[in-house]
Image 1: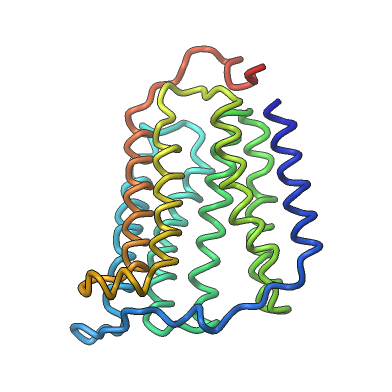
Image 2: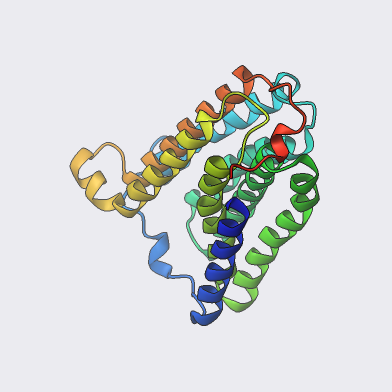
Amino acid sequence: MGYVLLMTTIVIMVAIILKHPPIEQSQAYHDFSDSKTMVGIPNFWNVMSNLPFMIVGLMGLCKLKPITKDKTEYVFFFLGLVLVSLGSSYYHLNPNDVTLVWDRLPMCMVFMALFSMVISEFVGDRIGYVLLYPLLVLGMASIYIWIEFNDLRLYALIQFYPILAIPIILVFFKSKYDNTLGYWVLLMAYALAKVLEHYDNPIHDHLRIISGHSLKHISSAIGLYILLHGYVKRNKIEDENLQECEIN
């Protein structure tokens, strides 16, 4: 059942993307509600709220040994978070299409590495590892297509398909570890982050001190930290065939 849902979801999403006209980058995207300059840093809170990504990324890189023996996917994931912190900070110093490239490139790296990690943990090590590099290349390709053709359709696909596929994998497949709560928390944090992003202006008008977009960064980072904490605390289930078993 799990495989059927995953394949059906990707087929439907690809069909929608192909039928949909090219999605151009709106210039209104760069108009954030909070543009306050503090201590010489423009858009201060939108810049500084990226610091938690750096912290979680560095913590993850330092804790690779207790997390897993198979480190490649996790290196890409946590290194991607460090790069997200740098890239997003750079973008928010001067929001425009050129600086946005350096925000989205590492985000693609994080999304694709996380998807590969989930596949490895729940579906099979070999499948996840084989898909890692093609997924990373696909993520980079989505940025190239956006830059060259001003078309965000592939970028939308590689960002949102994993968000739909991961819950399916969590429900219909068994993890080789005993703690998977962190994935659900991360998904909820991501959903909250999207709401905060959408209501950037109203939240800023209400709170005045900080905007919805800055809170989006913080919400996402909290979800990522909880996921990291779960990685450190989890134990491997001593059943080598468990990760290959699908719930019928």
